[in-house]
Image 1 (tube, helix red, strand yellow):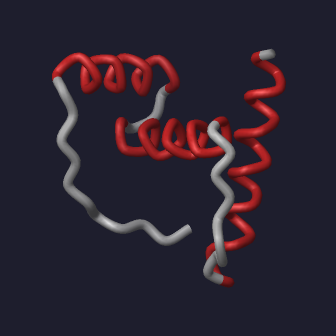
Image 2 (cartoon, rainbow, N blue to C red; image 1 turned 120 degrees about the horizontal axis):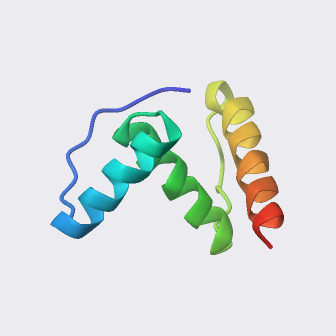
Length: 74
């Protein structure tokens, strides 16, 4: 999947939560935030309008994984 560098501003509580969660999962904060954003998008019903062909397969796999995780959580 293509990665773009962006700058985000998080309140200190959200950043601390993300850092702790990422550490607990053994991944970077950036990776954890990306996964959290995808899970929230799926949870709230977002569907991509027209995915880029190169990224579509990995996006679909991540979307499916996020849906599976949500179902497992109840």
